[in-house]
Length: 174
Image (cartoon, rainbow, N blue to C red):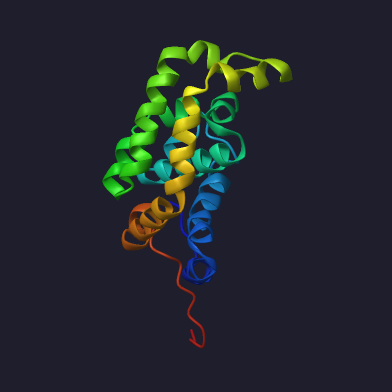
């Protein structure tokens, strides 16, 4: 079970929604040793996987788009799991739609998108898969609002994303 100190959650929330969400995903990454594998995938529940997938999705698309996300090995984790459906249930319907459309492109071209590439071949993929461009633009347009929706959902359902918070009691004598 993943537990996070209540003070850590509160301090992160004061810094902003991304910091708030990263408190959880940082704990997940620590629990799985920095990478999701077949051996450790069971350490996280569905909510935790969704939040971690959202982090990978957001970071990768912001840095280099869907091509980079897939080339860095996150395609299967995001598109072959119910991430889009879970985000929709959390209220992030715009992100969900983007993921469903990106999955169609991914499914149709998976082998080509996931193959090992040289730097030149990787760069050429951005031209070969321009159909991701519109989805990335939509993502950039709605990212902040949708992230706020996810952060609010997490805040209202803390027990699904981490066990009971570790509450530090000060001044108590034992």
